[in-house]
Amino acid sequence: MQKVMTVSTHHPSMRDRIFGWSFEDGNKVRHAFCERIGKEDEYMFFTDVPISKVRSGVTDNPSYSTILHALADNWKLLAPPTRYTQMENRKKVDCYEWWLVKD
Image (cartoon, rainbow, N blue to C red):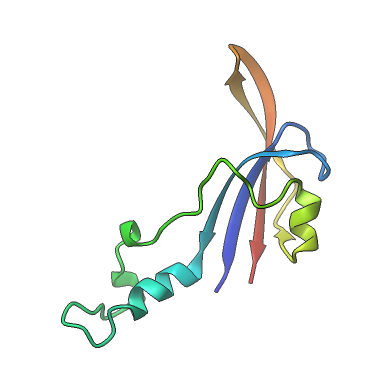
């Protein structure tokens, strides 16, 4: 199953420190589905699994310090980073969002 990770950095460099991230794992849907096989309330199809039953991987502590660390662990970069602006200490700050996938 495919895994998707988005991370944020302050600069468009793969060596810049990651300050925020989220992670989704398609295996979690499969696990939620399989947990009910043979039970009275089992799901008929994967699409029957309520998304609320699938836990997200959002946390303040990213698994990787930089994009390079993620690439070394076989993550693949989907595209160049996308710039966005957010408020930090009452100032607008440019940030960069990166999307990575892993099979």
